[in-house]
Amino acid sequence: MRFDVVTLFPAMFAAITEHGITRRAHELRLWTLTTWNPRDFTADAHRTVDDRPYGGGPGMVMMAEPLAQAVAAIRAEGAGARVIALAPAGHALNDAQVRRWAEGGGSMAIVCGRYEGIDQRFLDDCVDEVVSVGDFVMSGGELAAMALIDAVVRQLPGALKEASADEESFATGLLDAPHYTRPEQWRGRDVPAVLLSGHHADIEAWRRREALAATLRQRPELIRSARAEGRLTARDERDLRELAQVGAAESKSAA
Image 1 (cartoon, rainbow, N blue to C red):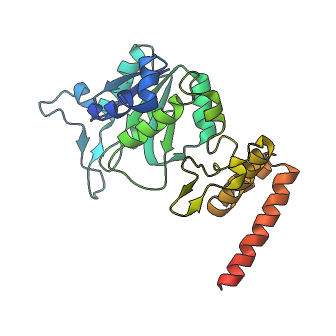
Image 2 (cartoon, rainbow, N blue to C red; image 1 turned 90 degrees about the vertical axis):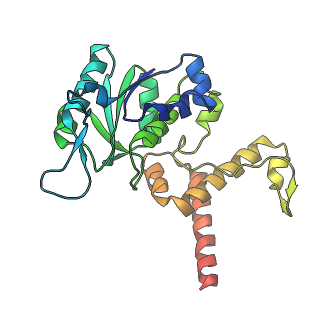
């Protein structure tokens, strides 16, 4: 899969080409990365890519033309089948979309915003989707772009063991169960006995219940989505009722 990233700071992307799972997948040519600096598509001596916002207000806004020319250059190479811009106003990135992109393969152009934002006319004319990685504001889109690329790359066949990807948080629509490793006792805390039992059916049942508990506690909206999508079994529903009763009892006791 090919990624083309429009960014004022191309050196930042060494973090994913030179480290970890993404580095190994990059070396295996499972994905490629080309960066494009919008300053290279300016005509003035100062290589200006931003200007003051019309209507006043703080900060600067990235200009449409250098970004549009960068995207045009990407498409001239036959890439950038999908053009994604990263901004807080975009729709929330989720696991299902990441998996669809990975399964689709091909190429993707990612535009990293900076300053107060990007001229809306560029977003309207040149971008297919505006994506957000969370309800918070960062200094620019580079870290978000790396998060998106990392999420997609790890789903590419051969990037990591398929079982690992299938069992991760959100793959089933739920958060993941807790994980433990050696030693069996650490600072007075024991590994749950079921994980030492060797009984695979019991272990899977425990993990499922713990995943339900974590999701109910931290992301209850995912439970609602899983229920609407028919992902929950009769046993899941029974466990959820029991977990809800335990939670209610604990809340009443604390009060």
